[in-house]
Image (cartoon, rainbow, N blue to C red; front, side):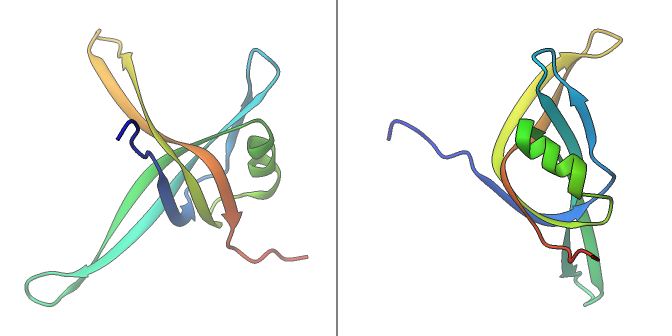
Length: 113
C-alpha cells in the first residue's frame, strides 16, 4: 500500500459563531469549534455524556458559506482530514494543535425563513 487514508467525518453542534479572516492572498479562512457528544453507561448503569471539541478550518468558498449561514448551536455534518500543526509557546516550548481541514459540510439545522 503506497498511501494511507486521512478522512474524518463528524456530526455535531457549532460551539461559537465562525471566526472568518482574510488571508494575504485575499482568500478567506474560517475557524469553528464543533462539539460531538457520546452517551454511555458507567459500571453502575448511570448514563453519562462526554463532549469532545474539534477545531474545524475551512477555506475560500466554504469559509464564505460558513460565515454567511452558520451560527452558534447549528447542527453540522463535516468531512475533512486531520492536520497537526506545531508552534512554540511564549516560553519556547513546542506545542501541537490538531485541526480538521474541511473538505465538505452539510447543514443539519432547519432554517427559519
